[in-house]
Image 1: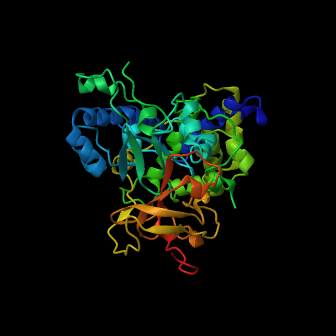
Image 2 (image 1 turned 90 degrees about the vertical axis):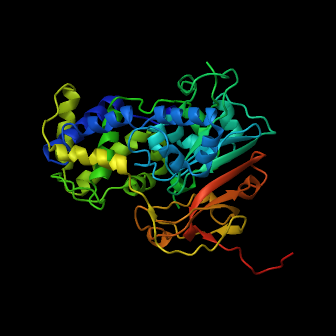
Image 3 (image 1 turned 120 degrees about the vertical axis):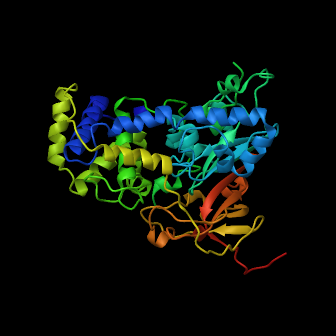
Length: 205
Length: 245
């Protein structure tokens, strides 16, 4: 899309200066502190992030009863696990999980903005926020998934979930072939944000 | 009508981005941090008061209203956090926290000296509240007594409510017919009152399933379903006039 538009030559340097100026003014005027921005960023590096989602999915792979509870009452099942405080916090107050199976593939989208389950996945990647993805996934999910390198056979039903109210969604991907007998910690490494949103599947490395 | 309300199904856009990074420029982290702090310090939340000078309401709804009010070409032109930077800077100017002149002047200073340090200071209580907001969240669920007009399996029509500044009704679902997939327990408020669009007060939320053929006749892929969570105000019983089988 970039070539359709003209941008100022110092596009990124200008935005970098402007946001730093805004932050400086807000600190000076007592709206935020000199540590506020770092506090927020640190929270998403250590407390809310895809490392939580990976633990949840790995548990669901090794414990079918947990997976059932996760699908039936997502927040209650997540609360069973030893995860950081805030798993029902901002943008995760009401989460709902759906599971892929041999005949169903799930894809999470947000056509109006970029609703994303923060506690379990952290912040949304750029592909999820892109208006082109949000437009096209609603009408031609197979074509879109193919561009992500994930061809879905015609015989598999695709369920596209548009997050337009206050419920936040994620996918339990299928456990990858070749991961038999592995520990939960080993399995966590195969769970990516893309697999938990449905533009990828989990693969055993 | 606003293009931003009607993105679902838009054609001719070219390939999708497969960029998996959250931030593609370091500066984007700062505007995300500022936005999250604004949400956390917004005075309608039941969190401890702090010495912060932030005294006006800021929620996702305010950020979204800004994005939805953009020229649609600019909506596509600017990257995600560029839109945030424009909207949030404008908010602080419009609400009198800063002036456009001082923001421009300081931007020039940082442009010529990017390593110029930030000011220091501020009460730790402010940052404690920011963390508490992230941990506690801001649940839209309410115990209010509401009636559920529909049950799982019911056929429903989606209303064509008046088009206003902000909505949670995806445009491509207006006037379409779907099937109730889930009746969510309890009642849900929205972050603001959207006026004649109709949400804000506690009401049921339904997950509604749509067939692609209903949404885009002869112009959609096969063997998929689209599900959307919709506030009850957007959902109505099918018209009963006309012939019935």
